[in-house]
Image (cartoon, rainbow over all chains, first blue to last red; front, side, top):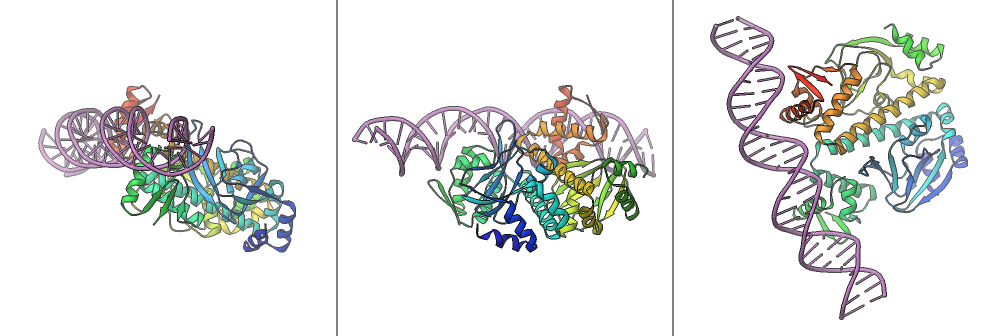
Length: 208
Length: 208
DNA sequence: AACACAGCGTAACTTATGTTACGCTATCCC
DNA sequence: GGGATAGCGTAACATAAGTTACGCTGTGTT
């Protein structure tokens, strides 16, 4: 929780605003795999990531699932903001990719902050910008890449977001996030291994 | 241009704000097929659609293209806002699907309006919400639907947006927007015709 | 040790989609 | 009319991806 202040000041927030956010928010821990925001219940808080790593998943009504992008330390879920302000809900699920520490900010103050603090407006719009970019990146992957390229992109994204060359996931889990089947993932990973791009072990993939 | 006032008041804008927008903006006509916002030049204005129909396209560096969604009367391009506020550019192109009348609003006033007018804040965030929804809808189509379903969805979208059962496009044009090939579109359209979902004529598709 | 099971590799097959090629016809231009 | 061309239909084939099935091997349990 120590880096809350760091993160807030890193965003150029005014002292007064920093104090308000510290006062009004609450701390929340989520352990790896835990659900932060479930799709249908419109939460009244937006999550600011202090440490750890979250992932956004899109789900459809058939049980299909799709990884969209990660939320790293210092970032927030822009969609939660509109979601709350407009009261609508989207079929998005936010899950902890690693054990994470969050700062939950109640929505009812957001409108006032946007009005009052230029730094907060900048923060909100920068978040939107970043989320749009990420969403478009995800869309590009699906629309323009073949599965092997998508898979590699996924692995590299994970490496970048976690800061580790080692990915501890099963083929089944990867398959689910890419909305394909385990066999396909195994096939393509094997090929990536033959091409010396990765190294495989049980429950573990190392990126070279 | 007559409906500018209608649209502004329809958004619940304060009289003062309506006057400001009318004063500071400028009218712009785009004829069908014309480019409204080109990807790389960060425009300093955001477009408000008064009449007609715009479409957003995503383009990658290989010349691939992908239809995202439509902007109808009363709507604005939320991505332009972040784009301008943050100075970054996205590889999005906005093209007139029909002859359209726009009201171009210079960005430098937007921050002040957000600060001052609650109705404008609502408008901006509603726009974001809508655009996120549309983007996610586009994503769903690509991720979860097969090409024939995507094609049907595309046709229905076009019908809804244009308010007409008749679509004047060639198979080639449709193929480009769905990022597939002409032959595939012809094949699937033929099937849709056999299934009595559409009727085909030269340069023209009728939805049943 | 014996067992159950998760995780992975692989083959064989099906289906969806992309590609190439070619023919037909309406339309436009001269 | 004759030629050029755009738009479309169709076949034949190539490739990517999904599916089913089965075997192997660690790991954990009893």
